[in-house]
Length: 185
Image 1 (cartoon, rainbow, N blue to C red):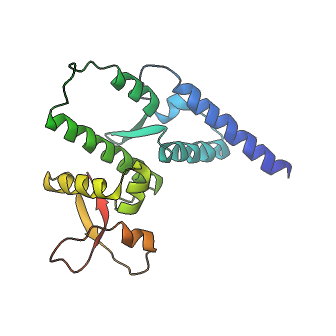
Image 2 (cartoon, rainbow, N blue to C red):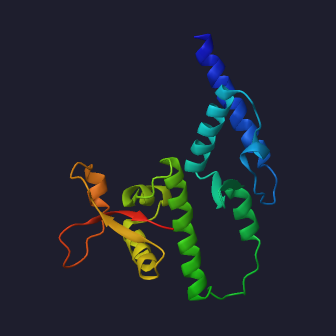
């Protein structure tokens, strides 16, 4: 029993160290070694597992730079973005609204892709759950992404998906099979 308690304590310690590395108010891009450097294999495994967990929860945003992955705190990014000035009483231009929507989809997609070990086909139902937006809005946004060449939709390769997956699928007129996954660059 002591070993299980030791692992739980170690996981908590590592999570706190990761969050402390990103506790600054200005966004910072940090590498794995800048966040937590250890030679212990056990600690490395728990550390990488915690990074995946925090990324899937939306706390961290992984960004690829060549063959390196850097991490950014989503809270710090939101704080900086909320301080950007906007013209009084005017809505953002349509291209800005589309870019913001695209960024939201891309961030959620990247987090899900990372959480599933880099496999690029993400279920539309998972994307909808991650983003927390109405399914109709997600379908509309995904179709805009597809038309802009920033995403592609894919049909099911197996009939053994839960009803939730089939219920979130995009059905196009004239198409016999629904689209259940999306991939993005």
